[in-house]
Length: 230
Image 1 (cartoon, rainbow, N blue to C red):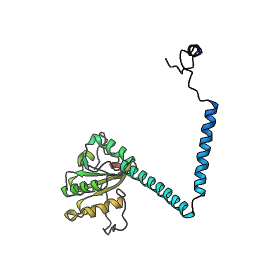
Image 2: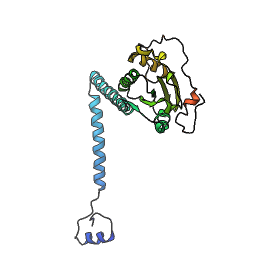
Image 3: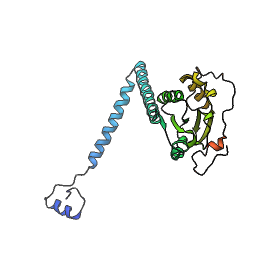
Image 4: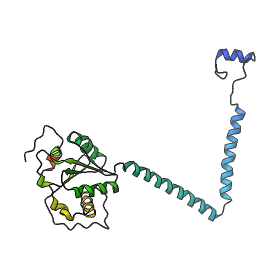
């Protein structure tokens, strides 16, 4: 039984002195709390009035530093929430819609068609560790596109906003065995898959056809009922 509960039975017990009076905030207590709050505010204002201009500037600088620090912390938390990948992960055909098409609405995705070019796999693994907000995947070529010819490998598909953004085809496009992490990074920067670094990006490669298959075809890669016309 709660002796402070407002019931008729408790009122009877209080009247007979069996339980203590109910705890209530009196009007005098309320007035005292208001007076204390007003006094604290006046004391703070008086304290500011007594400070010199230099002291006020110092307080303002401290407040500015606090706001900037909070903003930076919020940015770091937002970045940490996005940087959740960090590896080159293999998927299978049934995973494609979930792991690529749907997931690309939230982040950029780079898909490597395998098996070919262990060098590219190594470079993509390194880039995945550097750009953890980008999802790096690999999938067997003919699981992704039925009857996809080996001569088109290596192939990279870049997805974003729920759709394919770039379809990069063939060893020659990537520089063959001369391909480096930096050259691959620049190619992916050009597609928007990873953040652009204007101080380092110089794309002097000749213009080439970027795709053997249309964007429409690659957008339906995971459809079990689709058969390639190629």
